[in-house]
Structure formats: C-alpha cells, structure tokens
Image (cartoon, rainbow, N blue to C red; front, side):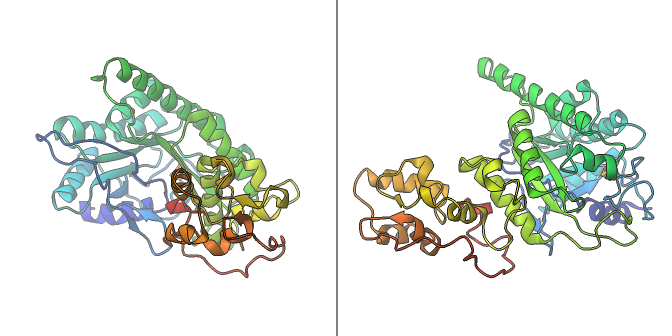
Length: 410
Ligand code: SF4
C-alpha cells in the first residue's frame, strides 16, 4: 500500500475525532526552521456535518487492539486497515506545510501493542518534526490513556496541545461500550498533563527559558447520544473535568450510526441541535458564571432543543428580572438572554460616561428580541416576561451562525 492510499484511509478514520481546534497556541517561527502558529493559528475546514477538521488530521494507524463499541476502528470492525511509519507522517506534514495546505498536524492513533508503544510512536513524529526539521507549526497529539508519565512529559514538550479522550459521559457508559477503558486511567493521564503543565508554567515564571509544556493546554472529547446519559450527567462530568484538570475545551460529538454497528448502539444519530445546546451550556459555565446544576434539574435532566439554555434559565427565574442595564453588576448582566460577554464589558465601560438607551444596545448588536423582556433601560421597561411555555417552534440552527456559542454571544 502506498502513502497516498494510507492517507485516504487514515485521514478518513480521523474524521470522527472532533478535538482538533487549535485556538490558543502561540509558537513563533525563529527564522531557521519552517512554520509558526501565531496570528490566525491553524487553518480549519468543516465537514458537511459541521465538524471541525484540519487538513492534515490523521491517525498513525487505524489498527486497534481495543473494542470500543461506538468506534469504527475497534478490533472487531470489518474495515480496511493501514499504518503509517513515523517518518511517513513527518514527510507528509512537511510536504503539506510547504505546499501551504496545512498549518499544523493533528495526530491520533488506535492502540497498537500497548499505550506506551503507541505513545512512543506519536512522540517520534513530533520529536522529529521539532528537533530534526525545526517545524514551528501547531502540533496536537493524542495522549494515550495509560501511557507512562515519562512519555506524557516528553509528548508535552513537543506538542502544543495534548488530548486524552474521556470518550463517554460516565464510567458506567464505558463499562458497557468501551470495556478496556477506565475513567480512572483516562483521568490519571489528564492529571499527569495538568501537573506537568503547572510545573512548567511555574518554572517559566522564574526562568523564562524553561521549555513550554503543552502551550495550548489539554482538551478532551466526549461522544454524546451513544448511551442514555442525560445532559445533566454530561454537564456534571464536564464541570468535574474543567475544575480538576484545567481543560481548555471539551468537544461534544453527537453519535452517528455507521454500517454494521453493534446492536447496543442507537439506530438514529444524536440530533445536531443537542450537540449545539451542550456547547452553549459549556460556554455558559465557562464564561457566564452558570453552574451545571442551574442549567438542568433532576426533574428536567435534558436541555431544551427548542430554545437556548440561557433563555430557559431566565424564563424559570422571573424573580431575577428585569435587570437595569444602567445599574446591574457584571455577573447579573451576564445572565440576560441576548447579551454576550463581550457586550457586557462594553456596556460596563459605556456606563462610565452615559446612561444607555435601547438605541445604544442596538449599536452594540445586542439581540434585542431576546433581551428586551428582561431589561430595563432609560427608555424601556418590559411589559411582562415570556412564560416558560412560550418557546419558539423548533428549527434546526446553523452551528456556525455568526451569533452563537462559538462567538460568545448567548
Ligand atoms: S481505543 Fe480509540 S481507536 Fe481503539 S477502539 Fe477505542 S476509541 Fe477506537
């Protein structure tokens, strides 16, 4: 099998991993090697189903000794297999980079022989790119759960980002669908990354020449909709992971059925809108001061598919509103539907000079339709707040609409 044929198989196999965004990496070219990841960062492209894919996003191999039921690369899957050598991946990366096709590499792999052996192969690619070819572009490596501390430390010195996938929302889900994987082992790998990053950041504060460790931090991916885990459980797991291991991002991937899938899996894909609501909730928890427990309840453990989670919260807390845009503190303004966190900062600074009218909010592109029922301005007092059952009829949202969780406006 030639490299081109391997590329077709292993790039296709990598498309199921959504944890490939590169935001946050800063690695300047030094004028000797090739590439840098400053400024715009890595180029992204989007598959027709809306997932983010970098052009050279590949697996080292789609052979795998594990049998995760939800994964097309599992050992019992009847698919064509291929395996790159580390040198082939290095050459491909450099060739693609020099042709301006890519700005970085996202490299994952099935588990071959053992977690340590697999991790060593991934490190070999990154080490060669950095030390032999002086590649300054973005590198995201998969951290193989269970790999030894020594290897995680090495990987973090060459990669801008590491990601150990949590795979499913609960340990119980893993028992059912990924029997070789253990939450404790995955989290132990995340912990090693977090500890090494803390140490390296601390050392760099004292001695700036200390090498960076995963400059863009760590991320993880969670498949949703493959098990009955509720949005409440998913958000609880997310809160735990963000708090415990300082993850930069969690990527939620709606389960998609594939041919000849195991009978334990759902026949239908998870609705894209559910994935979108989880991202919105994730954003609310990280930037708007909401907790997972506020966004769902024991009685209503699923996020609404018909309205965004901030609006759902606002409708169920009439005692909190209306909020005076000219007097409310930051944390209160952040809870008003239709006002994104950047606009909250703008409102706070405009308020120092004059009191705001609705026209001022219009100029800031506040989504007035969403915000007006909850806001008081000099020239506006809401008549009444919308009732909880006045949700808009369901429409499939555009995941990449200009105003969305991805832009910070909720
Ligand atoms: S270890 Fe990774 S590649 Fe292997 S079956 Fe599980 S999810 Fe798929």
